[in-house]
Amino acid sequence: EPAQLRAAAALIAGAERLVVLTGAGMSAESGVPTFRDALTGLWARYDAQALATPEAFEQDPALVWGWYEWRRELVERVGPNAGHEAVARRDAVVITQNVDDLHERAGSKNPIHLHGSLFTPRCSGCGRAAGAPAVGGAGTEGPRTPPSCEHCQSLVRPGVVWFGESLPVDALEKAVEAAANADVLVTVGTSGVVHPAAEIPQVTAKLGGTVIQVNPQPTPLDPFCAVNLRGPAATVLPEIIR
Ligand code: APR
Ligand code: ZN
Image 1 (tube, rainbow, N blue to C red):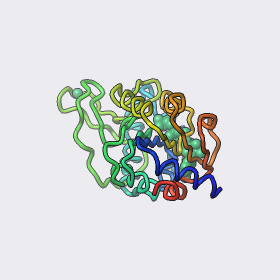
Image 2 (cartoon, protein in one colour):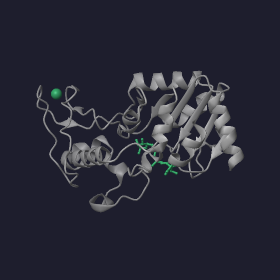
Image 3 (tube, protein in one colour):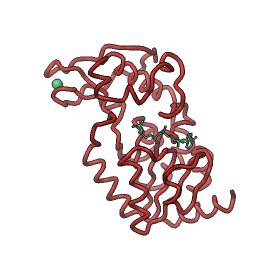
């Protein structure tokens, strides 16, 4: 409602230490499916969450590598939406659970990637960063054999955090510190069910900061939010971040 939009816009305009936490819903209007959307095409028979595990990669590296390469090529074919661009207008600390590069391409500086990135593959053995993936793939669906590490010949894996794996410590520490210092935190497009990312808005709320949520659906974060804007990111964010 307009009154809630005005309230959120005033809180954000007056924020001195603004933090924006984003999830898959932030990229939905760019055409990147969220994790809990029903998958289409060849991937429809898979559960995205079943592919996002070390066991899945162990069992079928080509299927998992192919899934992430397909998603990277999809991200390369789309672009940031008006929501990403609104976020980039402010000197906010951006914390994202997304592994796409749409915040960077909209102009946000150094977003904190809590769950890694599609653009930083690394060796599953020695951990070395593998060469930047070849751009401009055809976006074909299906298994693809992952490259081998030039140093130790182990398989290269996606540079993302899988279920059961710990988050990059420096990213999590920076995110919690930013949330603790925030006077306003806007959480956008996250279902708030995956921890520890889901705790970040609570850090701000518990330390007296104000949390604003942008999500068409209610989430477990609702109780910590001063304002709950039930709408899509690309429509709402340009209204509240001037
Ligand atoms: N604008 C804003 N929010 C939206 C939009 C939109 N246009 N479309 C969908 N949403 C909301 C949905 O209502 C849902 O609450 O985005 C959220 C997407 O939830 P998930 O798919 O669970 O994505 P996310 O919360 O980022 O998942 C967290 O889970 O799968 C793991 O590691 C993966 O980072 C991911 C983590
Ligand atoms: Zn290696």
